[in-house]
Image 1 (cartoon, one colour):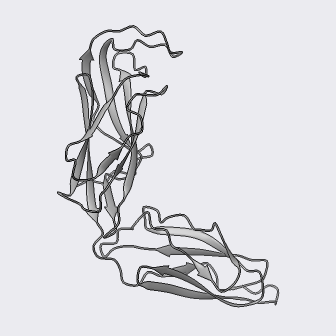
Image 2 (cartoon, rainbow, N blue to C red; image 1 turned 30 degrees about the horizontal axis):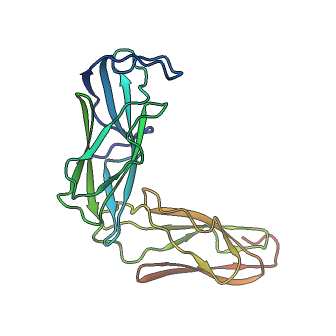
Length: 241
């Protein structure tokens, strides 16, 4: 199993195949549709090839298929794409449109069905005789660190200040758990954004808390059967940090 960090996402091997020639003049882009060799490619918009999900939950990954003329490299709009899973029982593919758009793309979402199955699936695409595969690993997060905690950038502030609030979830191997939304609460003030964004690939979510009065306030982050708490004090004395 491998993890690849890429700016543009993860790409499957490019498949090429020969199809019958058909002129097409109905599009603005200069290309010949179905003439010669197609190049077909699967691109996953994810920094790794591993999809992790919490027990009883699911996870998803977005991607797209791009079809080009292999000789000219020009995109091929209006081409029907056959998209499927090698193991249909291990996750589902959601594909609202199976015909390439003006960018030569067909967008899709792969979603786990709460079970890892054999631990992976293969997304398969074919256009004529051109084919490509992408192997995506599926792993449940079985054991999590028992005490996630809130991180605060400061605990003493004035009414004009704010506090950066973070929350991190990692498993026992040190890998972050992504896609979890934490419903932060506080005994006063307000959060921005509210709600916080889901945890990222490192298992971390970050936002800010803003006071609206002086006093001592508790910030809480309930998650599963545990609630992490920390406190801040808003003081009327200028210059305290």
